[in-house]
Length: 305
Image (cartoon, rainbow, N blue to C red; front, side, top):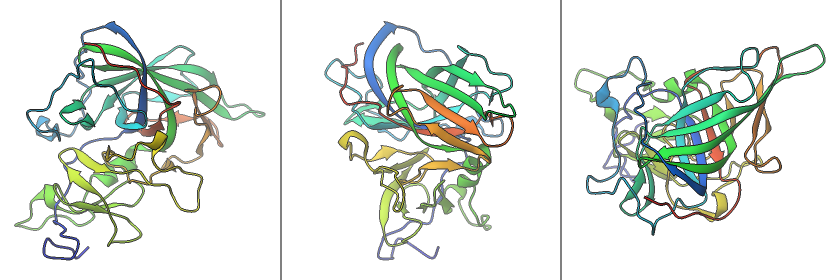
């Protein structure tokens, strides 16, 4: 990429640590549920050591918000799907889970920790037939964080396959003898370029346009509308830098999922229900895939300890 700290964009040639697949979810608190101990999540990538689990927030940040804090509408949460979904095997009501893959800043000193969970369930399944496409409808409706379970609503912005997530974490050019792996350049799902941990993130179409900053475990960028598409920019007016993990600031639609398309994003009735369809046979969404979700409606509910 030919950029350096001495260049006009003050770019550091570094790279993001290797992690595994995501859901990128913008979620939205609507009602606290009963307090519950957060279960341990041991479904980590099989080829990534524990040293890859990092926190982007300062060490003095609060891990638990008080009653004066809320999850702002339009907050993006990057999540990895923990199990495979198949229109041939899934059943209505089946529980699905995802792992939050980067610390999510909410306000100064308050964040959702990486490793927290989102929970949901399958709403409806339609197997492929000669007259109908395979279809899976699902809903993510709970966040487990701060030792409590909180009701949420989310809708779909983008979805990426397992291999696209891996590629986004792998530098296109391997390290040399004296290179530090996490300082190497990588390319996000959607095309943004990351110049290593601590360095800037630039638009894939314009190397001089800085759209975010690389941090431990991902990136912080403001979401952007995608030119020439119906893809939106900031959701519910939330123009703060968001935790996008391995996704571009304008990522939208499907990536690397052949024959799969978004039939319903959940922004309209039925609100919060995400529907995917397959144009060819069985719909199979593999474990490690990811989604980009947006808040379903405006408003917030105060978090309670």
